[in-house]
Image (cartoon, rainbow, N blue to C red; front, side, top):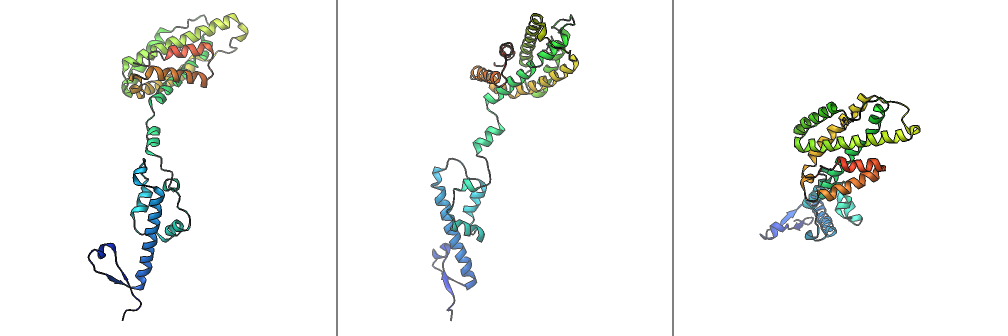
Length: 266
Ligand SMILES: C=C(O[C@@H]1C=C(C(=O)O)C=C[C@H]1O)C(=O)O
């Protein structure tokens, strides 16, 4: 006689009308199964209708709702406290949109990098001007300009940017750089007290310029889609205004920055 047995019918078996007898040890499993079902129902209720969720659930949540028997601890906590929204409790899995924007900067971010590097390049005009000031030498150094343009053309090919458009941008960068140097020489001539007391080594400053040049070539290549988009002019103007503000540029450098990035779009 089977007094200590219960009859349990699984959903699958009930459709075939074949009840099965489970041993007591199986009852506790069954109890867990029911509790797990309740927890799963709570989780599902907390998630709301499937159609209301615009973002795919993280993998952890998906497996919690898909697996019929969670571990007892998970069941206990799920039933003892109100189940918070699974997204809030899950490990910090970034939403796909956020992850995408972090991995793929948008056109404004790309152009902002280009403008920021142009400002960094222009910031070297002061030490270069100081290195040349009082030497009697000219601001212009056509041989150095040639070397710079040849180098960036080569680097542009490596970076996947067009050498022609890259050289065009760098011609503007060079003109802007020289405009700042000349403005500083005029300022120092007019007010000798403001002239630099020391003369930096030109080759050391040029090493820094070369580093910025390389970064700028790569940033220009990475910004190619942004540079050919119809939105480029507007976004470039916004990025230029932003960089002027971030770096608190004076009038000379602010005007020169606009000159330096003139050929970035198109
Ligand atoms: C920066 C310098 O001054 C000028 C500007 C250059 C540039 O922007 O790369 C290159 C040569 C010079 O005509 C320099 O002499 O190094």
